[in-house]
Amino acid sequence: MKIILALLLMSGLAVAADTPPQTVIPRPEAMRQLHGMWVNGVYGCDVLNYYLYDYTDQHPESVKFLGGDDIATVDGFIEYLRSKSPIIVKDENGNKACLIFYNGAVLTPWGQEIVFLVDRKKDGYLSAFGERASVNEYKDPWQKGGFKYSKAVGITLKSRPTFIQTHERLLVPLNDEDYNRLKETVLKGQR
Image 1 (cartoon, one colour):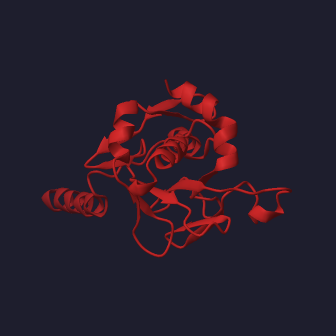
Image 2 (cartoon, rainbow, N blue to C red):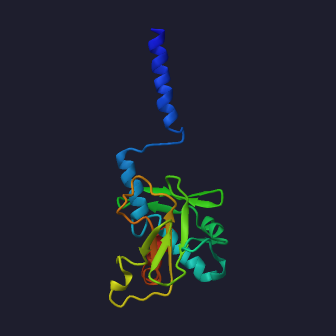
């Protein structure tokens, strides 16, 4: 009996050792909500794009690029966002959560750091962490009739969460055309 109990305890410890204590595996419906909060076109995490666009328009000198891609630090932006806090994000069913401010970063409701992007080449694409995405809804941005833009920003994550499939775009862009079209609606909804 003692041997069986010892084996059961040891096998339980081995399983527990494989899963760090901070790991949480959400229920499937929670995974759908988190997915929606990232991809929801107007009220998801990309609400940060509207603030990022607005802030970098007012403070273009605040943008500093970290490498050859479009990843940027934006001096003063986190403080600006804190003044807008709480920043509520929603999925397509209206489920809500707040973005998290922690240790000088903005985190998703599930705890991943959001990375800011500013288009530096004006070639119609944003790139970060090996992903390249069009600045509009077309795979090739220039396929959109009459498309032209002067500025684009975006957000992404350092790693793909399990609820965002590999064929889905992780990088979320915003160009000046979309910013101007949606600015009042989106920013009013946050107040």
